[in-house]
View 1 (cartoon, one colour):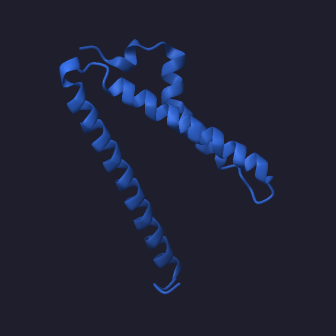
View 2: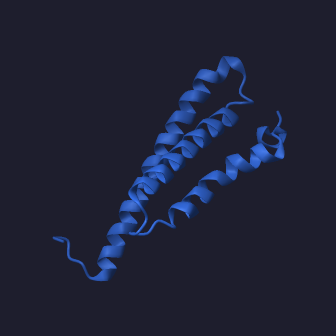
View 3: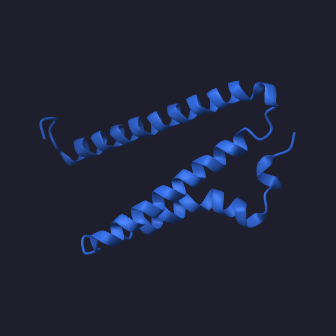
Amino acid sequence: MTNATNTLPGPIRLRIHKQSPISIVILAGITPQTPQYIVVAMLAIHCALRSLQSTAIGTLACLDVPRDRMSCANGFLSGTAQLSSGMGVALGAVLLHTSSIRRGASDSD
């Protein structure tokens, strides 16, 4: 088996691994003075890049799987993606709640 990531040309490898952090840094530049149409355009581009990244990672994950095991691998990949997404939401909720407690907000706020 080969490592699928190492078989890709450099620019493609860079785009797969670096697009999400770059778009997050760009989104961090949004201020209350940023026009709404620019915010919508930035969010649309960010979402499109995330979608492409998800597709690319899913393709690379199943690249070395034999054809007869592809169904199991695809199911496992989907389950893992859902689990990691749910864990991210749960972690975000815990951090938000912890942050509000540290600020002194009550549960009724």
